Length: 193
Image 1 (cartoon, rainbow, N blue to C red):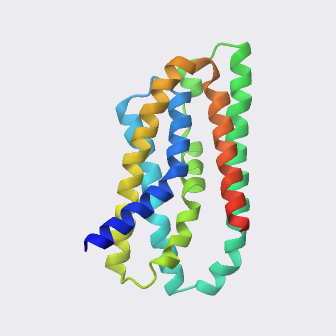
Image 2 (cartoon, one colour):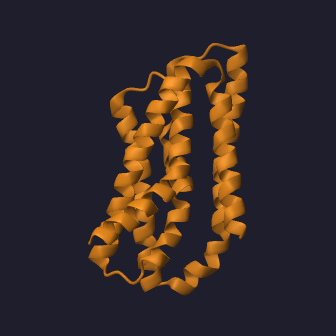
């Protein structure tokens, strides 16, 4: 049981790094974010990191042939999604240099949050293939560990981003956009291997 917990915690840490970087960017972008909003954002990322390995496990046990043909599209999807979100942040950051925006205009929209959660967890779908030997309840426990680790790591990312965001608020959207675009390229290049 100890090795199960340890292995899945490490897996969760590895999978949460993209979500951590995006959390950092969101904290930079919104330095006055309240705790409740931080919990919501980290919770969305954690939920996706929980669901994706479980969905991968279900795919292995049901429609593995269909999924394997779609697996090649995952890096492209992540690149396009994070590139679009990052590009939008860059554009808004450049506009911020010319105009003053209210805190409400800089807030992360619900649609963007869902898109970020999906894009940062898409690689966790393939984890379902590595846990395919587990029964459903054990696969669910592994996914819960991964989601819990992601929640904690994303909260740390948001806190760090907020702290740096108050100091770098003028350049926060530019930096956040560059981080998201680079994560998209990283996922894309890793997926091509």
